[in-house]
Image (cartoon, rainbow, N blue to C red):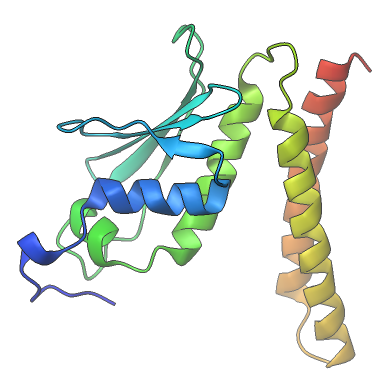
Length: 180
């Protein structure tokens, strides 16, 4: 749904909205660290001090994972939304339905965080693996319901496959960090 006739001054701030949807998906341990005048959203994890930077620029959102101590290794990814019906990326962030996009953005962020070097006591990869396992269980229940109701199951099966493949990648990172 778009609101092109809404006064731009009355629209929600695109950076604040982007930060809010990321925090909603990533959890309460992530807090905003964006300063007035910044063109990107910065979130910091209150326990691990890891950072996520989401920079909406030129029709896409660039995402970076960082640590406080160094920017030398910054895993980077990007998300390009469908801006159909919107004036630009800021308009989409302010007025668009970000439900599906927020899930994809959170998945990308988790994958980027898993690539950061582990600090002693760092449990980010393990936490992400647990989140993936929970999501897989939820999707497996949906898949079973499709079978019971004799509904098409192909899309649900593909989603299970996609999630399982992602879990394998995360499990490899967790096992490597644990020395297995």
